[in-house]
Length: 258
Image (cartoon, rainbow, N blue to C red):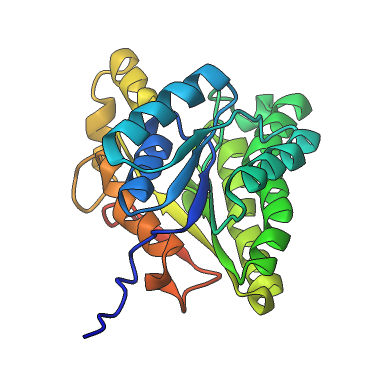
């Protein structure tokens, strides 16, 4: 008797997760490996990539490659993608998670240098990685690209104008990619988290009493998510379980409103 393949099973798939040595990026890389994928762990520092890759491989038994690349550096990305392709011979999924929001700067004080730094990583990085990966996916029969946004793309926020604007641009770029690459059997979606526990959240809690309660209060569930709670949604979008989903934005936010 032949059993149908589990649509969430990623066995045989190769997935890149940028910005995946900590936070939700690390959780996603670990979860994708648990689902059977060979995973590429990425950040700017090779030692962190190696350590994280080794830990995920030991925990899951998956093939995991740690490979550093600053995705905000346009000309560095092709070599990174070529190295992944040379190692595995295919690329089936990309999770464009790498992003920065280094400081809270009011609109009136936002400089061109600061604005361009944010956009180089948060918009140009996913664009460049996707440009380089798309032909490989096309020649391999298709694939899935997931761009990690944020609920702030819909609401904005005081002193996070560059970050929120960059993620809003990424959501719009997602739709354009989905339209243009549908004929290549490449699906492109956004995944927009609400508040997840992270170093940024922990830092805010240390410097501002009541910060965590304030952030949690913006969700219907009145809480901050654990990083592992992002795994199900990203496995869904990367896997065949979402085969008829493209050009969409899935919010994982405890009920926050777009």
